[in-house]
Length: 232
Image 1: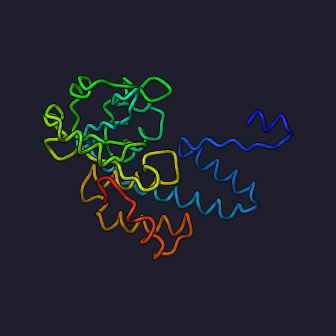
Image 2 (image 1 turned 180 degrees about the vertical axis):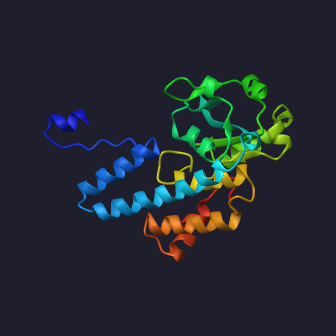
């Protein structure tokens, strides 16, 4: 941005890391392109969808909220690593809004992904483990972990709650327009029956239709076959 500004080119900076910033940035982009009504409609779409999930989770007693661990799987110098997000990042807030208790908050005081050992994961021994992967297909990561005897000892794995976060072109946990899909999916997984699978599938079609303007035929052709992870 600084190089462009040095050439007297105006720059709009966007953050998108939290819903508040997301709505602010959509408003700014709407102003930039001379379409504030579209920006308002998009913000209303996200606000209403977020509000529905939050209303559901507020009705859940804290004792019924599962201990939940979200892990980003990465590879550093050919070595696999597991990382947790900072407490202020969207991934943490998705777990909280969906009715889970993030077990990693004390280990997430930094400003970026924090690597954790398997020993720490085993010490937390959460009810649910959520896997996200941005480079290796998340289904492949899950298969690898399920072939590892030490992972099979975790409570979440014994309960069938090692869950691969859905992704299509991008993962649904990121500060990308898809985060609202990730939130609805996660709420349905943490509290089965709260958002039925059929409703999640309906929301995917509604999302790509409203946000990206795709027809039902194009969604079925281009999007649905791409979805990986434990969907729906």
